[in-house]
Length: 394
Image 1 (cartoon, rainbow, N blue to C red):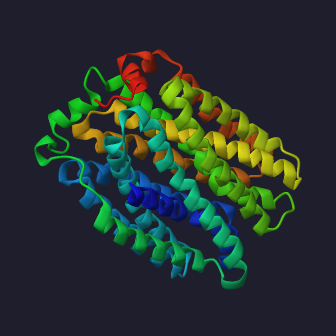
Image 2 (image 1 turned 180 degrees about the vertical axis):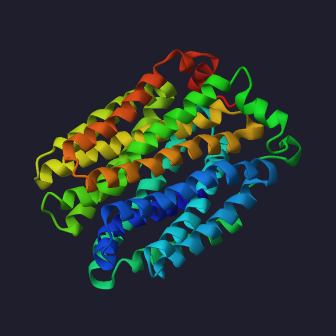
């Protein structure tokens, strides 16, 4: 379990390294917001492909083997990013890093869910999810401390070294969670029925849509907040500090969610968090240009968005049956990463076109408001939702 948490910590570091380094990269290479948005999206595109096409391999060939391979890819990708000489090379490095991140997350989420005590599964998954903002906070603090004196490349180099160390830890500690005879052949009729059969089709589609909409806004907030704060007249260091506050809130959000969900129900608490997320995005867009109000809005946004994300990750293991659990989780995360790829790019184009701060935040509040409606719809009140509320795995 500790190795899984460490892996999620470097996951958060590796994902957000580009957000913390974005302004320095723009200044160094003199690129436009649209190009930076493409660099943001490259890593997310890799995560989408890794979630959709590497995660299913974990059900077939073992979650331990696939997880270790993905951590190795993350290590190589982060170090390659540190030595990139132009936007194209950085895009390729981020794409490769994303493949590893996308593949490892679904596999580790499945391992944690299957080893957790059913009575406290939501809390355990929340602790696992909290590793992500811990890594993001670490990355933000290192960026504020190091970029000014040593440049943006040191952030990626640090991430590569840390990921390599976590790979070594998991090499000796990560268990295998499924027996070979329980695995199904990839992309077979049985595989497709398990994910899109009559019983589960509507729920699977709704779940994938929820991930897509959530990550559109999630990665808009994480990637573009530093730059948008700078446009209010603050320094890049202050912009990064606001994102660090978002991640402090993101550390609290999953832990509060886990405790409440074990008592009040998984989908109910998830819907509350998504409603709060939509409201907080708007508040982030109208907060006056003072540090106190920006920090307060950032803290609330982080708490809401991370709790909402945790609700989806906690739902995945109870929606998908064990023999395709990593594949189903990866499919949903893959659709989410597609949304995450689209969100920062759309924001970059909108900013380049002169769209204002408030209209931009209102536009990105809409997707998570739609997830609130999805979670309160009838599809999540059927037997699967009831099973989820009891903490049982199918």
